Image (cartoon, rainbow, N blue to C red; front, side, top):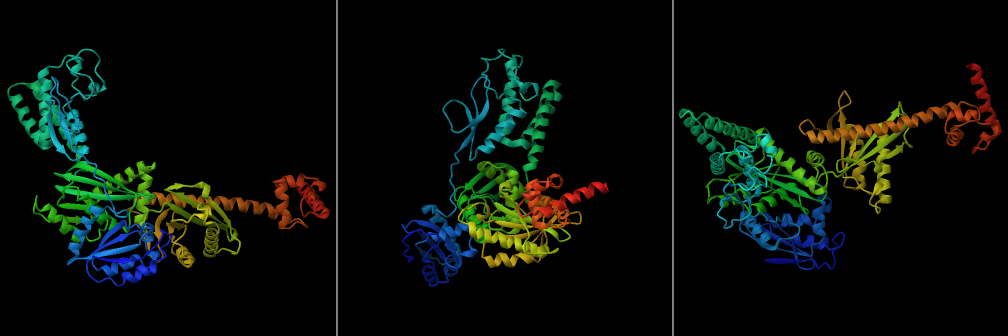
Length: 630
């Protein structure tokens, strides 16, 4: 093991010893291994593996512009690093997993395994109940399990009680038989209602026995057994009993049809997807066995370092250090070191199946649909944690992915130019924060330096002024002092090409795109400068971008109409001798309307700043002429 020191005394906003750390990182060998970052208190804050140590570690201490915010934050706190050389990249991967599990570094993905065992309990009462249980007790009850998650237990208990019409209320039988009216479940056919006192005990016991078989054998096994019993009853002319069994078979098939929504043709697999929000990421895992969803888990992570492909790789390593490995892992995007991970997971799976683990990224069909469902659930869980709606969280996350951003654009600014044949040039700026309009941050711009119809020139003026406002107010951290994650221009490739040099020259980390409309003035695509990004397959992102484009257009054109109306009114006054634009503006400021200007006396008009008696008398003369003409 080797160590390189940077001797940093504080945790600065920007590591002052970055050049020294980079110099030492450039001395590392081009060999596979594990690198370990320490802070000034010698705490391990990040562990990673590399195919070539020199190349990977030196990237951290080079230009910070190419890093995500969380990587920059980690680099700011690095005091020194050490490394361990391995023979192969695969050995480095295994060692990295082991060290992360041992040291739990702050900037690695760390998953808390708080998942205990769960059981299905069939009580030992005279009228047995089926319910969830977290532990086995010495109470004479029958326990099915253990199961690693509560999801499958809760789902199975709910299905069994509904199909076989077993009570789920708090009444105790036989104590409460005949002591009250049956509940709503009886009225809608979901309970046998032993409380009525009219149910034969043997029918109740039969239902519990069939529910037990269902829980042990599953839907297909239960349907086969019940069908055989139904036919036997019909042969013995026990038609009432046969009809009862027929109804249960029908209920089982209905449940099976509903389950097909979350079933797939792959017998055993895990599906992993993520959703990002402001400062947090949620990983969702769907676990399938026998083609059926049997469990699901969510992990909320506040600190994620690196690109999404790296984060997925870290998550997979951590998750399968706690969970059983399936033959197939389906993910929602690229995974760093996918082949090495497949090799590592295959070794863990060998004891059970001897099969090779595959990590897949579906692009269409059933599997892609399941991944999308998994991602939507991750967005919903993240939204609930952050007090937002899952739909909006999913839309912002989807837009970030579509545009290739490092993280979802939480703060979006959009701009549009409006004029009438080059006259009364104005611009509107709207802001969407976390997918919702932030009207307190809307701004209007009156174009000052551009004459005539020049949308590109007008947009350049507006963005230039916006950047200057940020420079002036950045310490405030709000309003113009807050930097947008994304700017969307209401226009295509031309607008993007006109503005991109301004953004690049500013050195500010702002993503820039345009919003392209079709012939019917509806949102069609995103202009990325030289290419277009289709929105047709991204429904949530399409809806969000459409709402942004409609809002900025409405805001800009409303401001233009107001400005144009005032301009028309002022122009009617400037036709009067002695009244120029400045005097017309002051008159309207004082009297509000042109009618009020004409109705004012000469003395009142003379009180207005810049007015002369001659000009006031010309206004009164114009009023008399208008009256005569009418």
